[in-house]
Length: 357
Ligand code: C2O
Image (tube, rainbow, N blue to C red; front, side, top):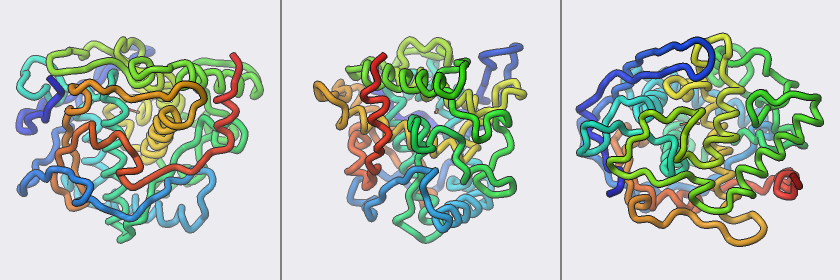
């Protein structure tokens, strides 16, 4: 049966382990607040909003950056237990990745939204509500997240976007790899070396492998995760059910961004802290954009999402812009257009689409 809604009243300390370097374990309380009102069932009608086009982080205007900064300022200044605060927003990630909750009706198996076919739809919903909250905080329903266009190896997307780098800004996070500030190019495979031309080539090859070569849902999105399937022992280095985009370029960017002088490469390098960094949401916007790209825009045979009812009917909780708990399912996450947002065409996509390994 599909993964169902966890019992939010049964919460444990989350556990996070280092995956490289000396073994380190940290415990974090990421138990989620339970709002007093009723749980809302998501519907497209209830959450109708103006169309939004998410822009590349390295291309937005100074005005846009100012607006984005104000939105995160407000999000950071909400009380810590407000479901719309950055603190609770980041706990949502920790809660469903590090063992705070068990699977619905299954006390012995933890709920994990990584390492399987749930990865893409769960993160899409996460961004969807995060974006709505930011928009409502600044009173602008047209507000949209930016995407960190790290797969762009030609037009300037493949460095840390400048908008996130102003010390003191609400978009800044000091727990990042200080050796990877611009003009250092991103590395879409951990540990690759060489001059910039060589790195660019390996980056293009990585995107090509994770999107073009991964031609079916199982390979790209990840494998079946249903009630009772236990992936508690999976790690970012060994996730047999994880899809190519998750296990590959997505994980690589988390590691590349996090601070390697900290035991768990915080913030971006580990689940408990990754989404404390506002750059996380821009990173995941690009993952989300690449999902659409994979579905609609690659040459050859049309690619399709999983169709298994255990995939389509899986359900999650999120908080909306009023702080209410919303119940959503995977089925409703499959079309970004239905959720009211889209991505512009990116010319540099051609470089990896047509890469010949
Ligand atoms: Cu929930 Cu990029 O990981």
